Length: 102
Image (cartoon, rainbow, N blue to C red; front, top):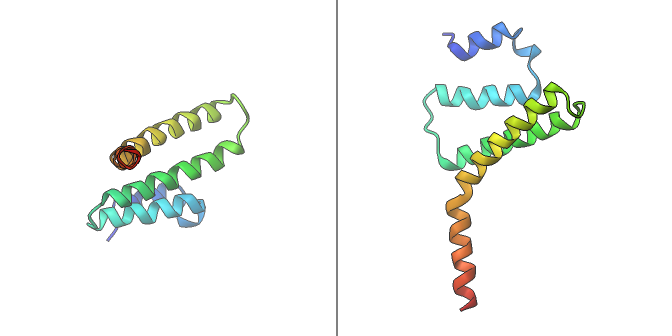
C-alpha cells in the first residue's frame, strides 16, 4: 500500500533518482510513518545526520549563491534544534563540572 512518502518519491523520479542522503532520510521517515515511536535519541541522530548532509552540500556550492544562502539557513535551523535537544545534557554536565570543583 502506497503512502504519502512513496507518492513523493515517485514525483521526484523514483528511488533511483534520490541521493544517498535522500534515501537515508526516506528510510528514517518511513519508520515514523510505520508507527515507530520517536525518541529524543532518534531525534538527536536525525538532526546530526541532517547537519552533516547540509555541510557536505554547502562545501560544493558557490559562495553567496542562492543555494548557498538556503543551505546556510537550513544549517542554522538544524543547529538551533540540535542545541535545543542537547541543552539538558549540557546543563547537567556543566553542573557536574561545577560541583566537582567544590
